[in-house]
Length: 386
Ligand code: COA
Image 1 (cartoon, helix red, strand yellow):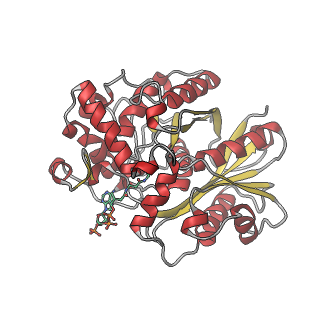
Image 2: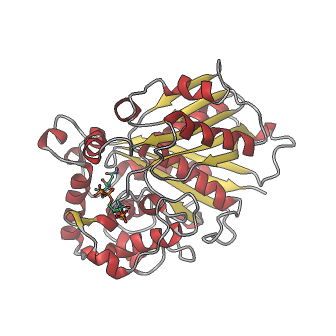
Image 3: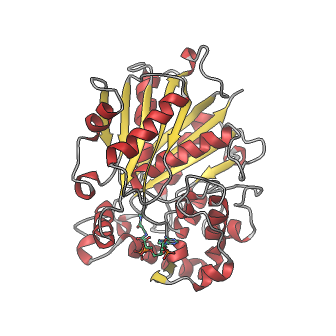
């Protein structure tokens, strides 16, 4: 397998983009990434998206987007793994370039959620859960995560407000990200007084819906030649794992086994340990998911994820900074695009262009994208090598 680097990134602001079509959203991110890479063309396009068929009445996104960005006749395909569709697209691009099947590839994630009424989007999001055993009981995604959080509070004795700093940190970081949906700090009081969505998850524990797209161009390191002016950002670890789609089917509903497996494999490939990771773009769709992800990826003991937040170790100057550009909570969570936003933000940090929340001397960054409530998890580790 060849070593692969990211040489171009592009993203749109996460927002309510009523003025942009699905193809424009994805297309602008792709065109920006290709331009940033200093290229005119790429060989293939891999696109992550969850709900275009129902929310936008459009499938066939491979050909649909490739044609619009001037890649007619190129290989192009859509990948779907619910909220981890973005990282699935990135991993497919990586495997294609690493294998030698293609020389240049663009990975893009896109989701356009705000054209549909909230109730419809809530129903569509629940298709990431088990239709027979979970959704048929009337459960939504927020409710599913609320059950997990409730059990977590009971098992480990935390108070709900011990999770406040996950949200406070994300919103404080989002202020500095021009592409974030929310760019306002929140206080502890705002967290504690936020309206309840599904007990114990309140508005400040939940990521918002939104529209957005993010993209990256991948090439083999051996072919970098004179490209580009930026530092070389190499992908040194990439792994994916699945688990039971229904939460009750898992060995332990409070442990993300797929996160543990994929992060361990990625650490092994990269030859690093959690101590070597300078920052972690994790999947804080709900604050409970941030805690579970930190634990399963080796940054905290079982049941101790909230301690890192309470002790301020997750802020940009902490031991393991997370959500450095706002995370899902403040940058936003256009589901099929999120994994690509995380990877683009890792590249920004490693290029040392994450203005306002730059991790000093950042050299190794990790991104973890979670599909469903933990059923399809993809971990990537990237390293700046010059
Ligand atoms: N965090 C902070 N503020 C939020 C927010 C969030 N998650 N969601 C909405 N808001 C704000 C809006 O900006 C708006 O503010 P304004 O009145 O100042 O303009 C206000 O709250 C109401 O917005 P609205 O869109 O009407 O909210 P809603 O009640 O329809 O939706 C949630 C709120 C939490 C239900 C919705 O964001 C949601 O469903 N989130 C979870 C999505 C999800 O499950 N994703 C998949 C995860 S795996």
